[in-house]
Image (cartoon, rainbow, N blue to C red; front, side):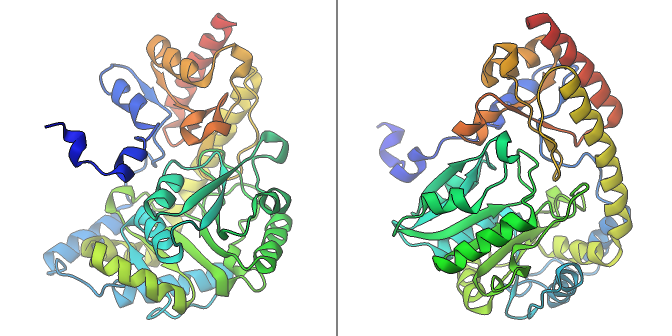
Amino acid sequence: MESDTFVSKLARSIPPSGIRRFFDIAATMEDVISLGIGEPDFDTPAPIVEAGVAALRNGGTHYTSNSGLIELRQAIAAHVKKLYGLSYDPVQEVLVTVGVSEALYVAMAALLDPGDEIIFAEPCFVAYEPAAVMAHATPVSIPTTPETEFQLTAEMIEAAITPKTKALFLASPNNPTGAVINRERLSAIAALAEKHNLVVISDEIYDRLVYGVEHVCFASLPGMRRRTIVLQGFSKAYAMTGWRVGYVVGPESLLAEMRKLHQYLIMSAPTVSQWAALRALEVGEPFVQEMHARYERRRRLVVDSLNAMGLACIEPHGAFYAFPNIQSTGLDDNKFAERLLQEERVAVVPGRAFGPSGAGFVRMSYATAYEKLEIALERIAGFVQRIR
């Protein structure tokens, strides 16, 4: 009997991540410098690790509340209040999740009905469209370009709105482009959300990794708190990817529905990770600032080097990615990434992995050591010069 007989149409309709293929190939090769993985190369700071170890030793191995440790939720509420002036009830309006990945799906599943349309910008993180499909909603992508610095605008959104549009998904700072939507554009988007009565899901996981610009929490804009779910977590700023702990803040009426789905899917986020996350909020700020400074130095090296070798790269103001245009090489993004890996042992991700509008670009992560970046950039420059 064919195995496809047992596989759902939903599962078959979702393609595998376009990121993984190049990592799998690179894993079989020697001397590869990977600029592909969207993960800090820093280890989790020692005090945070020690908090996790202490939790294990002290019996912190049982379920917590479905919503998460109350101590952590209180700290999250205080953290959001300090950064953005937003007040959330830690009991009813904060939910601790298994990273932002779970939060993303639970938010869409709780807010969207079959046939509802959700608008999002592209290029975008690979999970956004599949999450909407798994929630039986209809994803509607809006291509962005270097002409708007890959920022979404209210005019773009309004042109995509139909009677079926229910939600708007924002990701600022953006993966893979590094774009940070400025306050003026976000304010215009907020007015549009009010006008069309849209619920907004805002992925702000990279909020602490912005460079030379302001990060605006969308829920902090006038009138937006009541219609916005903010997705957040510890993976990027605190170098805690493997701990798998994120969180959501939003109005009680929306969080209550998300909590039900979270309860049946997950029960509660890993307890040890929650204690470590609490410690991150207590003592992690100096480590965040140190990592930020090092990312900034790497960002400058990568962007300046790419532009110097003729790979036009819009200034990425957030996250830890550059998204250069490689069309001047005469190769498409898939072929560029394949040949760069095979010939120069440098792994990057083709832009089309992040949606059709990413074609002609590649994503390069600068979440790797400065010295390795220097070597990788030398290899890329030699490759570009040779193929032109």
